[in-house]
Length: 264
Image (tube, rainbow, N blue to C red; front, side):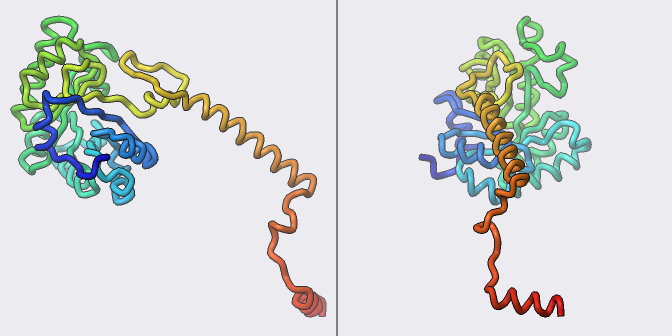
């Protein structure tokens, strides 16, 4: 059972020694489950951070995401990063330009970048598809990793890249490499909690592994919800609800006194 939250220095010291586990969580319940399950790292929306989050997940290393487009200028990113760190974040995810990464690093804010398939910039790499399947494309990922390293980032998510390419890059960079569908040659394996839990009926990405069928449980609960509401409606119509135990009582003498004065 973990008791101490790791630092950036702790994580970098682990690089190349063992695989870390990472999940994207968006609720306090999922954050608590990650903590109790021994998950090492979590990605979170900044709005989730705060005392309640740290009470639920005191020892997980948290990356609040500074979502691309929600911030525009470097000053916007700085303000968002400081707020996130003050609220309990340990580092920030940021896919802004290198000048912004460099500025955050100058203020001592640990930054995680993103290479490979970057959803907010996928139009440049052909949409939602694998990246790095040609020598030139793989070299471009390497150049982006080196640029992030030189700008002062300490980590990078590498998404949907051939495992051999990701492994070769990870072995040649000081960055902590977080693999989302990029193989075990990186430093951490990263999945979304909703995929792990099987929370929807739609498409799951190739790299996802579904461990539970929450979608079926949600369907079952919805049917139970409908049935309960239907029984309630029937009780109201028949007069079965409310029954005496659902009501506040009054002594007979008090009721008599009230009625007498009401009609007097």
